Image: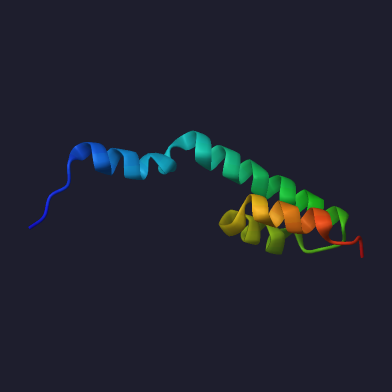
Length: 66
């Protein structure tokens, strides 16, 4: 069995800390509101934003208002 040092595991999972989740979730909510302002589905863009984050924001900003 291969064991890894504790420091590696702690640094690898450091992206799971609360500030990243809070920021990512806030961005997803902002994107949902931005999408609804452009007559797009807020729920769809919220879910896309969970996975793509800032890239979804860029796409939403560049989309024309429909």
